[in-house]
Image (spheres, helix red, strand yellow):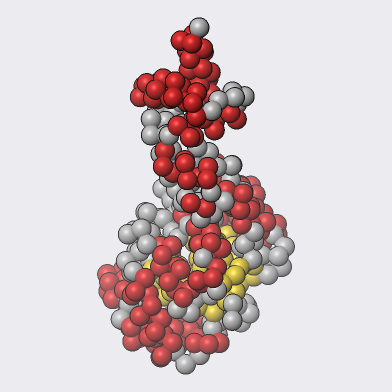
Length: 387
Ligand code: KIV
Ligand code: ZN
């Protein structure tokens, strides 16, 4: 049966943990509305206990969006949960996201807690949160570096206390797709309630595997993916949700999964985040980078002119990006140059190209991109040479 994948966007919380990024409350509201239009299922609007501004932002987003569920983040502490209760009071749809670290390094070096103390903290905090929220999401932070047995114990404790969403956090982007499959196998075999729970993953990109890990998790039982737009976030960032959405669309036969994402709005939401975060999107970034639909080499341009599917698995229109371009440079072939000349009004054929192309090559050696103006100059030179 086709799986329905939920998109949980944490651009406003984990995304804002990017060094140098600080969205205003007004910007957060605008972003949340754009995310709602894009079709995300859950917006993590902030960490209400962290600061009065974060509280205000979660409150403002809760009031601004209508269809999308809003969540605040809470450590496994009553005060954090109370702040989430107050901040999301006016949301039409809400949940809470409670977390505590479960891995040995975090338990011993950061929390100074024993396993029993961590278990008690999960039980107490989730039980408390469940009195106020129908949906309690519990995240074992650094889940992927947690002992498999203790991960099961932590998750079982959260489920028995009322959690219905379990979010496996690859907090430091340590795991790979094969290990994620093993992790899910362990959970499927040992968490009795596996089929009644929404399993989510939250992948960081320290080794460049956040999107691959998210997709592997979908293959192994996750039905909710957490991430950010453009992959912004702490250190190397989070799973880029636009890449997950595009992969589910392009490889829909493979993943047999669908979502509420309106893919045509993708470029628009990416542009907004890039602008508000003051973080230009790298040109070669998948799906939304300026070069994602640009082809320079002669062989590729020739293929594109014959059939765009030779070198494009996704059309720019499907993600709302600008049309495909075939920028002319020193690697371009005669076919692409002729096509461009005809497009801008010159009636040239393959014979004419024998004279034009050598001049084009000389210009292209000096310029990284040959513009329309350069082409006009080239054509003037060709005319002069003929007369
Ligand atoms: O990376 C992480 O572990 C987190 C948790 C709060 C889910 O952001
Ligand atoms: Zn995170």
